[in-house]
Image (cartoon, rainbow, N blue to C red; front, side):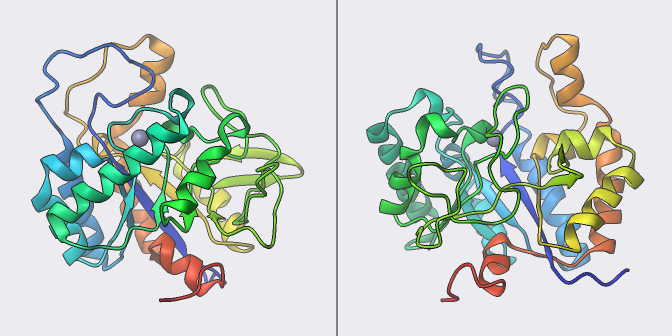
Length: 289
Ligand SMILES: [Zn+2]
């Protein structure tokens, strides 16, 4: 393994196969959940490699899968918040969002008792310049870092011009770093080459790109700063139910599912991994507890 000056974080957004903004109508057989199977596969591969990871879990999943949440925490992973039911913040008010965060806290307390959750990722990366109030709500509710600002424009979301590395978003313009800002932003991995940005953080890019292309993007980033990637349980449970999507969205959602586990094994062997919280603490962005 080549030596890198930074560690990397793998994050998992724990939701079901039908929680997608690409298909908002009710689905048939939503009860055929893949959360259990997909998340267990994730926990197993992490345990095999001895890495810890950050899990952005939906409050609904905390309620429906308490045993899975207990296992996650018992194995040393970081529990973080992905909202209650996967409604993007573009369709929420500050009051509704605050209510959702409190509901999430209540759901966690029922399973684990008093338990610190300091990280948040909005469903569909839905924090941008239109709803920067969300950062105030997060701060007021005790969150210390966010991972919802996607620093380039893609099909459904994005904030072009926002920093690609860890920073403290300014309240008046979340693309700007404010050294006094209380909330830390840890955006998912974007490679930047001669001013051009390439998203490499997510499941789609991991699945669609050849491993060597993906890997050289990550090598490049890790020489300069830490990065965070993300996957979903459905990407580790390829035989699960699928949404009735048109071919473009179907491609984005399902291309190369069968390659995910092998790629994950490779990445877990190549880099040093830990939780997002630990990276933020060890790199001086958050004071250690
Ligand atoms: Zn999600």
